Length: 491
Image (cartoon, rainbow, N blue to C red; front, side, top):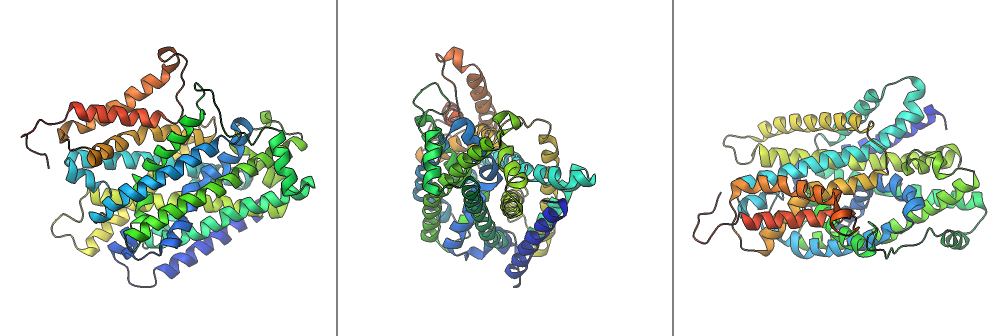
């Protein structure tokens, strides 16, 4: 594929996104439209679109490449996801709808106090800034290497162009636009995977059943690891997947903002459970694609040593060896993943900062027009922050991004897990001013134990379940700062 053809693909897809954005903002918009889509999003549209938002560029590129090193063990994590979605549907969504929340962290303010409220919002902002920037980096670096490097255009320009386009189509419509653009992005991502599987099947002259047998004979389809000291031990994977879903979806403003745009609680619950069930076959297809990519790469004489990271497998094969159709399909899927990662994040970050930190809805004299102007500035500010993080990530990228992402999530979402658990399942009242201290110490202690776990815990190595340990430290810290009966509640 030539750089001009790749650029044309990018512009065509971007035009489709702008068309959808234009159609969703034909009517008069207000701040409620931006934050919650006026609470009239069809649940089935939200469920379908959330597939793309959940998968993002991490699943699109990292999961297939990971098969060469970890086989299908990632699937056990996905089984845990489904258990997490049941918790979200039965516990968290009823709470959010009962309290009529726009920012889900408002709950922490009502339950514990202002410092807890700000702490929850802060950890979401940090988590989303880092996570979404990493996801976008995957896409930007492919565009840079295959298009803009050949024209001598620096990466800073590529990142700036990308963020400007995302800003333009999310600026006004917010969550109302994103609910509908997510459907397009999901469609292209899934189509790209299926088309690539069919093309590899044709190149290898093997039917799907034969390819499944070949993948199995090479050991790629192994799901369960029974060594308790392995980070991929199946029980670790399952419970890590469950809690990753609870925090990265149920306690995440980006994902919950889409759920809260549904018409009512019942629709939101149907959305979450449908979406969770669909992730199982879809992730299985991604893993199967990974097995086929490694099989095809071996036929081409490409070993694992040919790639700096496993994330490079899919783009290298699709763009260099499978022809124009595969290359175009890959790029449509990749761009879809990138937009899906960034648009919802910018809207959610803007929502949290405007409502939780600036308190725009609580401040007297705040008109719709004034809120809108401040919202625009915050939206642009977060776009600049994301750009800066993407530029910095290139210097430290040395492993599959999905591993980096889930490891970081274990540290940044752990305090949120502990705070919401104590808020929902206990009657403790805590000394609110000390909550930020607990939220800082818990990840630090988790990191120290993880770093020395093999010597402290008889060879045990932490994987993604570090999130659970972090949450337990937060719960223990909140217990230590709980108030005695009769002490006043902080507000």
